Amino acid sequence: RGKRAFIAGVADDNGYGWAIAKALAAAGAEILVGTWVPALNIFETSLRRGKFDESRKLPDGSLMDIVKVYPLDAVYDCPEDVPEDVKLNKRYAGSSNWTVKEVAETVKNDFGSIDILVHSLANGPEVTKPLLETSRRGYLAAISASSYSYVSLLQHFLPIMNPGGASISLTYIASERAIPGYGGGMSSAKAALESDTRVLAFEAGRKGKIRVNTISAGPLGSRAAKAIGFIEKMIEYSYVNAPLQKELLADEVGNTAAFLVSPLASAITGSTVYVDNGLNTMGLAV
Ligand code: NAD
Image (cartoon, rainbow, N blue to C red; front, side, top):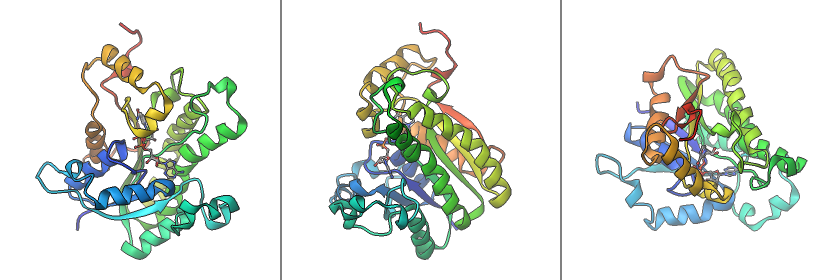
């Protein structure tokens, strides 16, 4: 039987989530995605109208099949957590069962189990503000959407993950080196995500024989990255300073993800794996 993957954080064909979905599909996995509720409508419409057909093309010429798109808001664990104004919001009221617990239950009812869980989402409402100017609310929102969302997803999906399965998330070097511009507590959120990767690897390894790793990716001009405002500068900086002077392709992160969740990586867990043209190894900009 082929493997089944749930990829949280796909809402267009530009980001790392999409590239990971494609790499897993190319390796024969069945693809389920979780899409942020406010982005669901346009994503499903675009899919249906064939807007992504060109980028759905796999190396063998076939088109990636997304078996099912689940609405998801990973800052809410269960219906009791959802505030009234969100419940009544038109975009949210139009979908149902989008809290983490409900999505895991729905996937279980639909398919029984999964083998691969991917977390490719982040959000920091104050990301453009320096940490010194970040509010408590903004900081906690960044941690909630970008770090706890992963704890919650793994917590709820682990019971339906087949032993031998694997999970990955996406992180960024701002967790361990100061990157001016990556503010709002997002650097803190990535530091938490990397630390949690080690603890969750232990716990999920012992509890469910599941491996947990995170990919520290270089800069990519995704929708989320464009919202930060300095992504073009970071891409240029990387091009000039990294050991490998080439564009970083989302597919290169996708391929690493496919490796990390495959049996080829059967002894790798708790690791932060850099896919950044080597930029993290440099100590001096040249
Ligand atoms: P992206 O826009 O493709 O992905 C982010 C996704 O998160 C979007 O689809 C968005 O709808 C979703 N999302 C936001 N809040 C959510 C919520 N509460 N519940 C569910 N989904 C939610 O952008 P991306 O850059 O590919 O981001 C994917 C991951 O890669 C993130 O963790 C990001 O921090 C990480 N990353 C990105 C870069 C980069 O330069 N783009 C570098 C390193 C790491």
